[in-house]
Length: 160
Image (cartoon, rainbow, N blue to C red; front, top):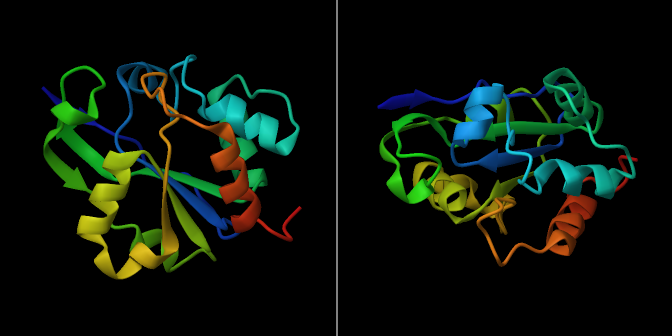
């Protein structure tokens, strides 16, 4: 069955684009990025910035915009079984240049291997600004929060 992703979240102050692959089943049910409560994304960001965990979609949107972070996924629509990136078929990918041309994005943090592979294939000329990050998915046993914190600190240096 064909599934649709989300519109990007960004504004003219965004400095970092965090780019996932495609929303999970729980994220699609919530209607916003990283909606699975077991996903480490929101706790990791809250810890990095020393803030409380945003609870609602509105709080999450305000949080990332306030912190100059943009969110998007490389796949805008696809056929997918459950939430598994490996099952993605017929992917329609996004053109991140539509954001890069309107916001001072310094780097793209790809949340997981699939995101990085798709970004590299679709935007080979932009690979130099991208970093492959350990997926925040609860299914990833190799997740390391300190890797995310180091990358965010470097990307947002001097912002806060």
